[in-house]
Length: 177
Image (cartoon, rainbow, N blue to C red; front, side):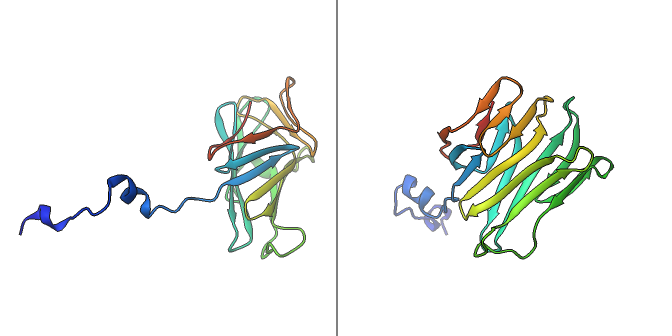
């Protein structure tokens, strides 16, 4: 039997190549008062993927992956899907409610706390299946630059403050520089 006869193309390649692809829903990230629409859930700071959010609506859960740095840019902890896989001297804690569903008033959230300083490193909540709100945080970038998130703004270092911006990410990351 001729091998070339086993495959018969009935549609143009362009259509056949995309026919079975399911597009991933885009995620809206609200960082302080800034809105990043149609993101892939990634937050880039100074060109590096610093934070990644995943929403699992079937489980009503919000998952975060994050590297935590000190003021010198040295990595101190790593959060992988809400679990601290690296935690320098037990310095950080993660509070994630178990068994919480979207039907609840509060919604699923993640709270990362620095036990040494008492600061909230990151507070995020799932507002809907396609929206995550980062409402508070004090952390450092991989370059040792301070990042502060409040409900009103997002400040990176001493020079850049973002407030009230609306950005269309078109399936890419939310970029904070």
